[in-house]
Length: 308
Image (cartoon, rainbow, N blue to C red):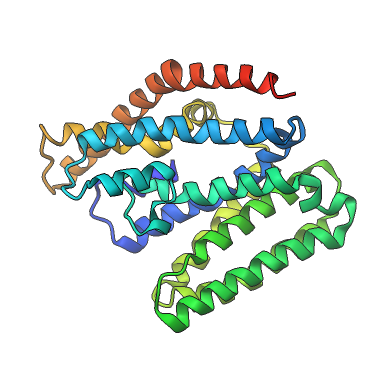
């Protein structure tokens, strides 16, 4: 929902849009780490990899095709479309067609890493030192990428390493939630992350240091507080059930309707535009989730059973 808000057609400063969206991104990767523990432990490697990739690529491809049909962007070359089908388009030198898809390569890489190494390697099979070593290594990588960005002036992907580290925090928080590691260890992991975060952000984002640090820390705080007090909200649960399509495809029906309806810059029209965008996005996500995504995942579960 935070990512959706960060893409609303409102005359807000860019820094406000960015901060709201990045808070959502931090929570998203914490959730990815937290939830992937049970997903990985009840599957073998082949099953897990099939499950994770099947949850991303088929619906992403469908949404990408739909966006290509409705997008007003004139720069939709065949090369750009093909590159976007990999989800690693920015690493191939092409712009995203679906704005929020910039996060997919990070999530896919994280899932592949979990598939190869397994959860217990990441958490050290009860050996506290190993979980700290792995997180520190990822934070060192974040700092090194930040240094490359700082000294070359080129946009090396610092966020790639930082968000992998956030997902690792999510994995470790699962163990903390189960009582497998102490509060002291969890706090130490967060401190290790924070030290690397500050250095990497200072090196990488000199014009938006406050926004980055604020967003990551508020995201962590919101996740830990909500999990700690066991927040339960029916609206967000319903939204979560259609979350992937809503997250990636919210702009598709709105992009289509703006071909026929123009919203002027007055505040009342901006608010009406936001409400219309939400209603369209929710309905669009509900229909695609129910009639496309769920049938696909049902077939994937059958394929998983064959990989035992």
